[in-house]
Image (cartoon, rainbow over all chains, first blue to last red; front, side):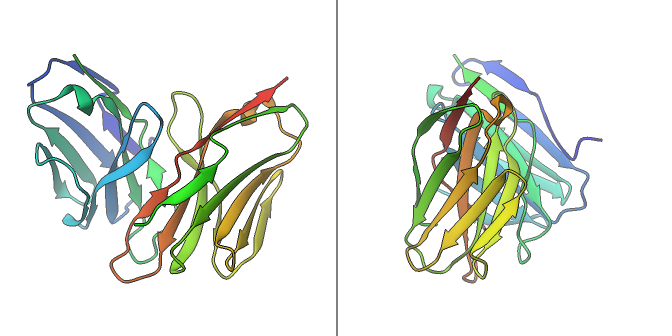
Length: 114
Length: 114
């Protein structure tokens, strides 16, 4: 069973479109994250949710809107896609916030904006 | 969180030799230091971690050392094998209230030459 699963794996789209990436974890974790990995492989946190509550919101354009319907899901919606949004987006989860330790990453979504 | 500097950015070693990657940080409140390995096209995965109350930790061919006074920690891989080729990320976590995130280094691309 996949611990953290995200879909789609590849996403190719035109500038200006709106797209969503879905993430689900079956580990029973309380905390979920979205990371962006650019072409230079730099991993940068975008958002974090703990029990459906937003706890980290880095300097990310408001075109990016995370949504957590329950603690097992954290989806990412992106409006008006731009060329610079092209990257690999990783969902991740951890047990909880206070005993934060190991991050479990999803397999990533490679977003290409043309 | 404050940055963590990682060096070198690329490292090539002959199979069987040792590899060392070093990270430095400035925030003395950091209390947790994990290392993640990311193989080409795959997700980052935790390989070893160390807490601030420990100076060294070893797991088979990999070890991590922490120097709190100098604010640096290092990953040591002995008897390198081709399957060790990957990008390695160090990270740090704060211990302060509200510090719920890991800050990653920019990664080291390790190539083990057979």
